[in-house]
Every structure is written in C-alpha cells, then in structure tokens.
View 1 (cartoon, rainbow, N blue to C red):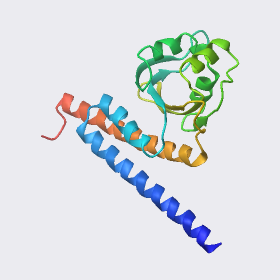
View 2: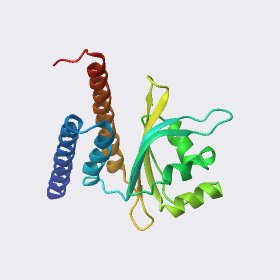
View 3: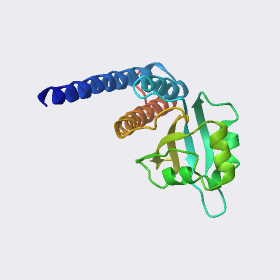
View 4: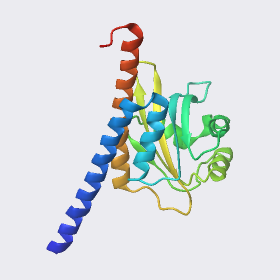
Length: 195
C-alpha cells in the first residue's frame, strides 16, 4: 500500500517536472520568437508532455443571430491549409465549437464522431478529429475569443483529466506570455519601450 502511494507521488513529480520544463521553454520562446512562431513552437513543446495528432488555434468571433462563428486569425499543426476554410462552411452548426465558445476558460473534451449535423460530422471524420480537446479565452481588448484545440484520432485514447488540467494550465501561461509579447510590440511601436 505504501509503495503504491510512493509510485503515485513519483509519477506526479515526474509530470510536474516535465510541465515545469515545458513552461520554462515556453517563456524562452516568448522572448526568442515572433508571435506566430511562439504559439506553434510552444504547442510542439507541449506535445512532448501531452501527445496529440493535430492542433488548431486562433482568434474567433462568436456567433450572432444571423452569422456563425468566424475564424479571423489561425494556425495549425498537421492539418491541411484548407482546414479553417473547410470548417467555416459548417461553423454555424458545429456543436463542439459552440460548446467551447460558450464556456470560456474551461477545457471542453469529446470523443467520437457524434455531431448531430452530418456536414460537421463528415468534416471531423475527414480530418480524424475523433478526440477533440479545446479551451477558449475571452479577449476583452478586441471582443474576440482565443481558442486552442488539440486532436487525437480514432485509434488513440481520449484526453484524460490530468491531460486536460495540464492543457488548461499550459494555455493560461501561453496566453499571458502572448499578451506580454503584444504589449512589448506596442511599446516599441509607440516609442515607449526601454532601449
């Protein structure tokens, strides 16, 4: 019994150390990379801690009465160039997207090709988005939402509770560092930066 507890503690410490290294690397990336590379490179580092098959992130407006959500700026890992445009065609009917946009700051997970809309379901099948995990943050400065989605295919296990907690914490760090990058760029552009 005591040995099992020690193994659990050791496993937690290994995860904590790996997460710490990931966040430290993220901090270095924020200083060394531009905003576009920072997000992609940061997710690639996180991929070593929480494996995923593909990822999509960006800024999105929420849906209004007559318009579906709109992706304004986005990036992706291991998804085709056409991914965002293809998604946009059925964005107004995407239940998972609506769920994540309706719960800012919460990690939303799902498993299966279960969207009630056939077009959305076909899109998920085409890109093997069997296990999505997403978090969205409000950007009050712009009125937009910032989202990060990770995906695993049908042959992989779903994202578990620990992976969801690590993802949430990682994305909070990443968002803060990205905001610092934007603030630094504004200071330099306006001449208010230290030289």
